[in-house]
Image (cartoon, rainbow, N blue to C red; front, side, top):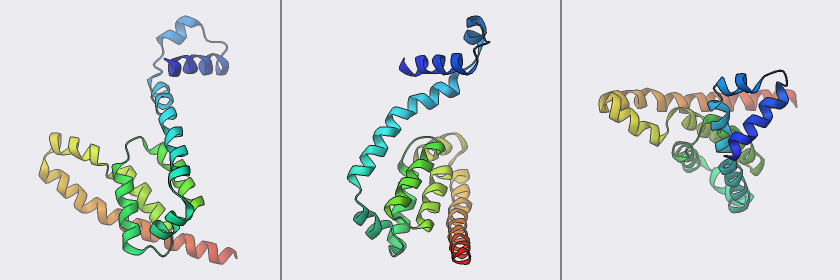
Length: 161
């Protein structure tokens, strides 16, 4: 309910020329969906700030975390529900805490293309063969693109120094 009220207020502020009838006839479901995710997102961000100390992040997901850090980042990206626009602020917070760029790219790649909840629906509607074939192509691509992003970022950073 609060999300609907906020959506109405935002719409009336940004478009004062619109009538109530025109406002009622529009489809504001994308805005309402975003506003419904925000409270949980802010709670999640606050809990991450408290529960994940920088030492833990640096040790398990930092530059020297190796394969285990990559695995945790990939797994983290696949199990957290929510739309992709939530992943970027989480990734920014993790970068501030010391996660490696490679692991950030893995996290965002996994979040955007390999969600466990979505894989269940894919299996149900498209079948096991399709799901496995898509994962066979998607997982190596996410890993390779994360590696390339990390290398390009490191090269760009060293050239600017």
